[in-house]
Image (cartoon, rainbow, N blue to C red):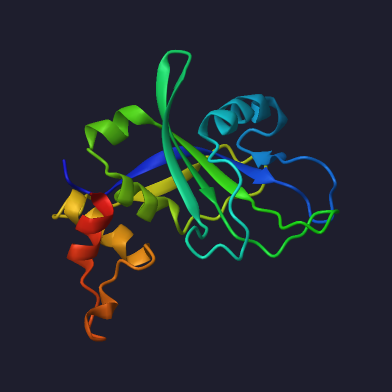
Length: 182
């Protein structure tokens, strides 16, 4: 039950073309145009809103959300990843593209996949060209430490929670994780 496994994921790329004055939209997705409406519905449900300006040091990209979504007779788990880019739109505003992945929840629940484990599977994935039907994600078994290990991972990325102020020694990840999780 704790072995690594592969899960099929549907995907979408949401953003704008460089130099465009158009609104954000699904630019590419699994199955192309016929599936864009499905992804638009998911994107509206899973949206985290607008990211802060680059000057805001407290909230940096990537922003990751995990959402459960019921579609017809099946429950899906979706992950959205808002990322940084160097693209600018026609009004010279930063373009913040987002990768979306949808997976059948049944296998994830059966395997007791944790958020951080799912993020580890999604983080390195680059989306394929349009019309590829799906991608395969390699999901590792959960860390032995479970939630505590996950909080330690998050603490590594949370500003001011690494414990470095303790005299310049190595970060106190466990204390930072517990502080972040409380």
